[in-house]
Length: 319
Image (cartoon, rainbow, N blue to C red; front, top):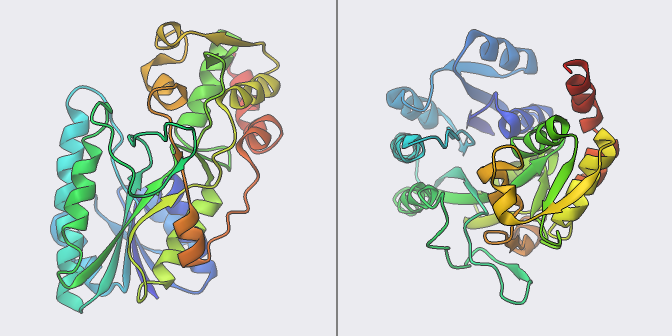
């Protein structure tokens, strides 16, 4: 296939690129800098210089592609930036969909979304892609671009959403996991909220990439929304204990009120690791319809004994 990937130099996107090239696909990847160009070229990708606001370029590249993987999103949560980033994302989706529509009927646009912000199952079970949205979720603006993307489905373009797990991990990267480790390193203790029994939705970055490509390969037969969830069984306490093991620091329970303080977890990590917005996202649909089988090592093991040992060593050197 010919793939166009936004976010190709990012955490998940770069692994998608690596695996797509290994499978023999032709890949054009969006790149904002010379360093990004060099990174993509080294992987065998044709770099396309631009960003999510170069709309004509997005449409042009999309028109050349069989499938577009839209992995890019600006996760600046400060002030009113998040709402503006959602607006830009909607405009980028317009451009990508217009390019696909103009180049042939039924081509596939795969848009990254998030599992967060769904109403948890009252009995603690998993929820599927139809779970209701939580009206009080602080980052609910992201659902605007989700709805905007799905409104493009059927108009000469097939659109799918991948609801990515809040805790993507592996290869010593991600947003939240290094943040969690860095805060524990600074405080010399790892924290969890309450009894720590909240079961987290997690996903290894390699499994995320294989799911994007599995969905791309099934472009002719399936669409809609898919939860990208590798596991829903690890608890917040287990994650904190893994961080404690990694850093050789004690592990302590705090209240939600204590956790949101900046010197502790802070508001963002408390939202991810806390009780109110944690739901367990079922990946049954992706497994059954796409034949996807996540195989990555579990999050606590990777934190305590795997790829994040390199990250911890760097933190220790900077003390």
